[in-house]
Image (cartoon, one colour):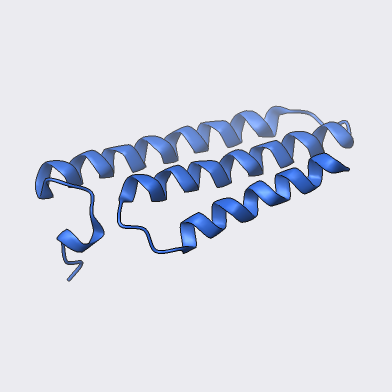
Length: 93
């Protein structure tokens, strides 16, 4: 039962970091990965609890890796065009 509370706390901390105002895109990407990690741990715990097949976890990890690669590619292209990853250095208009 303690594992569920730890996973829920990890999810809340990740959301708190994501929602709070940060200047860097890298911090936002790391908090998203932290949220995904807590969701993965919750899925592992739940699927092992009901003794279900773990195939869904492999699909979840594939989508997680694709999301991480997309975030890193956006970060690299933003650093190449603007010189840094500050949100205040570019306009979205």
